[in-house]
Length: 114
Image 1 (cartoon, one colour):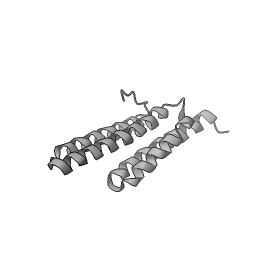
Image 2: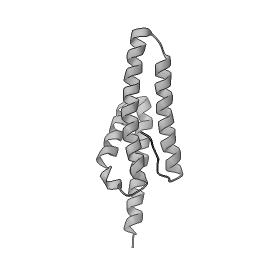
Image 3: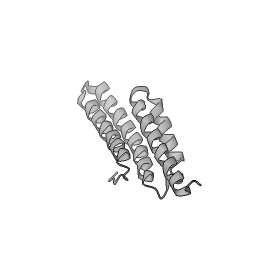
Image 4: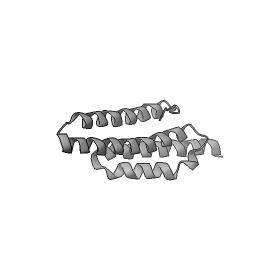
C-alpha cells in the first residue's frame, strides 16, 4: 500500500524540479520560464504543508524579479549602452536558480527574505 504522505511529497518534489528545470531552460528559450512559473503558481496549493511549497514560492518570485531585472537592464542598455546592469541581472537570476537547485538536492525548505 502506498503511503499518501510520501506520495504527496514525491509529487511536490517533482513539481519543484519541473518548475526549476523550465526556468533554467527559460534562460535560453524564454517561454519555458513563463510555463514553469505558471505551473508553480497553479500547483502551489497542492504543495502546502511540504518543504517544496517554499520552492514553488521561490520560483514564482524568481521569475518575476528576473523578468523585471532583465527588462530594466535592457532598457538601461538601450538608452546608455551600459552592459553592467545585464550582467548583474544575469548573476541575480543565476544565484536564485542555483539556490533552488542546491536546496532541492538537499531536500530542504528555502528560507527566504523575498
